[in-house]
Image (cartoon, rainbow, N blue to C red; front, side, top):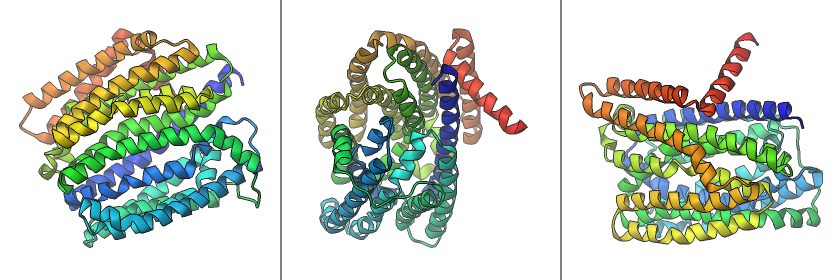
Length: 486
């Protein structure tokens, strides 16, 4: 693949991946704002108590097979069918586990409604398992245009249904059914519009090969998902459903930027990086630009969101959620480095070092034990501060090993990112100062904060000559012109 073809595929993939995530997640975020105004924080807390189990089960269902299929250059029907039947079997198995463990889980949290909720929500596991291979094939081919179409349709339909249910008094069940309907429609459309269909094929050799690579990712993913779930469990068990509601909404809000940005970049960059995995020089150059572009967006949005959190919450969901301001501010700094963590770990997978991926995850999760204990014995805000410290420590661990593989040292990476971080910090201070000085109108203040933040970021990008800013602007202007002329 030539350099021009590689860049063209990447930029096109990034455009559609960005469109998919921003539009579909933007729709979901708007829906969540409407639901937050209609529902109480406690109902979001109840939903947060059960939603933590879904990602853990999804890790088992995938078992790292998706990444193994994307990385493999010569996948055939045997590989896809073997993974499909394995995923579906594990999906059914885990739904059974969820169904029969729902009672003990509800008693653990002392919330009887959770039993039925978990038994119904568990259907998502089977639904997602059925469409996992179709989705993997689209990612492998960097075909995100179809995914974008599917995501938008399912997000709008499920969102409208959930708002109607909340209006009719369904309470927390409107959140449960939103997730089920959205996932069902996504996977139904994948089956209808995808060219791939399963055949009656199953290969033990293929299963063994995928499991050898994927098992380490399974263990690492399980560690990471369980680790994230422990924060929900800690707040849900030792505090109140209302506190968990504040945390759940704030975490979802910052994830709109951190996790979705990571998803956008990862699912495009992984197949592209895998295609040049044997050329270390090209890999390093491409990777440097990828990190700078990604973190320019992450620092800008999350520091800006933290600085304007009070006005943001008051305008969007109202004064009853004001307690969530400090949660959101701290979580923004927790999530700020998340795309960087993921990209550094992604390099280990590209180079086939899923064993090292697992070892690093084990080390970092052991370091997180004191963070959980702080949450149990001191308080939620102290735990969030400890999470920020842990995030920076984890970054240095990830960077050391991923940099060693492609000769991109931690010092070199920090030097690349330092100007971007400091310009974003300047922006954040100015935006926060605007919020303190302008108190006469909350909506007006928020709009001024957004405008000031954007102007400062663009000014710093021009002054310091950030190539990341110029590249991002070039991509969006090019696609905007193409869409207008096409």
